[in-house]
Length: 121
Image: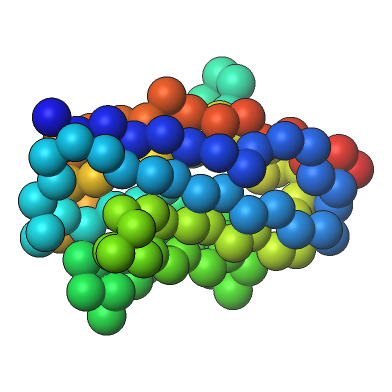
């Protein structure tokens, strides 16, 4: 019912920036929060950032606080993740997600296919 498509991944450098975008299509609940998760090789999927439908509430994983910023444009059904001060540890596949607020893996209604982010040192 809801499809999510990520874009903007690629190669970044330590200290640099990348911006990820996610476009939603299909039937979408207006109350859905959207956000990002990531998974590095050999590690569990971890929470990165989430934003409420109104955009008034955001929260971030501890490892990205102060470096990443999430935003959304409901008119375009998109959510973005601005990643600054990149670290090699940020290398992972980043997944866009949508679901009820607060965003939790167990309550997600949709996952994107993921976009690779690689940060060189």
